[in-house]
Amino acid sequence: MCSVRPALRDIVYIIVNSNWFLRASVFGLLAVATSSILGAQGPATQSTRDSTARDPNSVQPERPTVATHAGTVARGWFELEEGAEWDKAADGKRTLFAPMNLKIGLASRAQLNVLVNLITDPSPATSLAVSDFTFGIKYRLVDDAPIIGDFAILPAIKLPWASTLSAGTGTTDFSLLLVSSHQLGAVAMDLNVGQTWRGGDGTRAPKMASLWTASFGFPIDGPLGAVAEVFGYPRTTGPVGAKGTAALLTGPTYLVREWLAVDAGIIVPIAGEQAHAIYAGFVWNMGCAATRSICRE
Image (cartoon, rainbow, N blue to C red; front, side, top):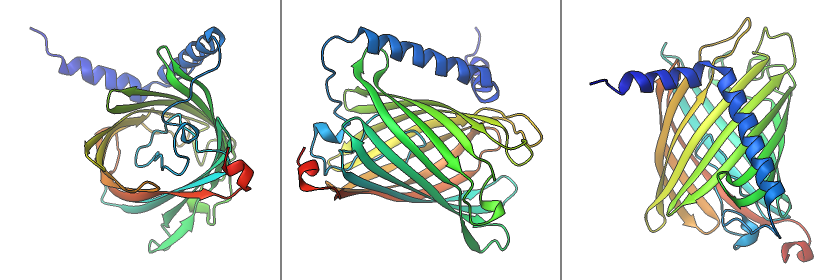
């Protein structure tokens, strides 16, 4: 009788070490999404993950997972995600990583993301530095489609604006993230695959990098919920290439108010040299900063 464990290890190895696997996933999802959009009849329904289909003041966290969902904040509304992550690498090195994501509703199906991080500067290690800035636009293409569910794309550009040389890659990056979200009863499932193309000569950061995630959020009791996610970064090539990694993220979430959610949890490695980590953060729906006529739409 054969064991399933070697087969599972083989699957993880293929995912974390094969860029072709991610490229095939990207093209496959795009093909299915295109077919769903072209085959749609009549007006698309609004996603229950979309603020324009609910109270626009209701927070819709993308934290604490690596994955994003297909929902977008309402036009003119602002939502802020802040967090802190404390990493401990296999060699004992400790790093603080504090991500910030400001989400701004541009239209009923589009939102602007502005991302920047505070990270530990290794020289000196006690100081914090500002990372490169990333600007992306999430656009929801279709809702409740067969197979792909709520489907969105998130193209982004990262600019080399880090405050110190060690806090950024020194490259201009272009990325594309594909997002497929599903509501499975009480469980929200978000699947992402993405690819990044970097400028430069590959000596500071690999010229190409990939990402995959599978995230699951579910209620526990009233405002208390939990999230579990498996995510990974396939191997990269070039002078500073690295082996692929995979990890498990899990922890509780709590809806303090309709407009405020908090989270905390841990990250543990599954494969590769992924650091152990603990994290905490919040998501705050800041309200509408546009004119009254826009806020009422």
